[in-house]
Length: 409
Image (cartoon, rainbow, N blue to C red):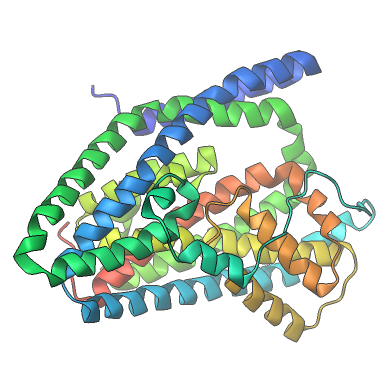
């Protein structure tokens, strides 16, 4: 029987939980620190390899896709549909989070144990401005952008303009288009090779978290974790319902195709780890390359549905814990602020916490409340990152159908 990558990833996940629990229960603090320091290398190596290929992969696939589309008018039309869908999906995620956090009120259980001053592990919000976003968006040196996985937006902007330029010069641009097409295929082949390290990365990631924090922390925060994952489940139902509206029963085949990037995203809590495989699997599902290569790089920065829900959930949870009574109009304002400030921050470490910290400070909610989320942020991050993968898969399907493309599956 042929060994499937999915099975190995699941095995890595289960072994990671078992080994992490054993280390946490049987080792002293020094031994745990030594173990996590060594075990972390599996995840570090895998994520570094993924970061290595993301820049060339986005550049090559998007240039080929845009050059294949051919004209600025069509690219503009696709861009409007894509961004329009992202805004729509973001508003749904934020609104669903807003409704759930007001009904379930998860912050009330923390009212008696609140931090009163900031702590060093809370991420800084300095420099998180519109000017910073524009600086992230407009490239001044494509080689600098390619050298950093945090500058995906700059690569996207350059690739769109360069693809249009190649299409504009006709036959003279064909050799470069063919070169980029060859680079894209080489990067996808490299992706398949790197993915065989994924089970080790999954084992590494999950065992380190469990060894450090212990399974017991899941029991302490079980009510909050349960509420959040219930919210994510509802969001999945909504997103898959839209998918069903576009492609009917093929939505189940879509889920089957993306199970590996889903598991990778969940186990590593990293959208980057899932991106190359998701691109590959959507192509296998039958969505045209010009659609996937256009929508996914934008979705990587603009369409983080799981993170959207988490930001609403986290912000209002902290407000409830501190007894800060926000009116519905204030909550809606916060929702809109979150939607704007969250765009284009995929490359920032613990991006969701940075956005929450930047937002709640504007509503007189103590930033120190982030300490309530820090102990379980990794566990919540796993669910929201997997949801981001589902959201981007559905977004690609939606844009493909809106463009009148037939999905050959």
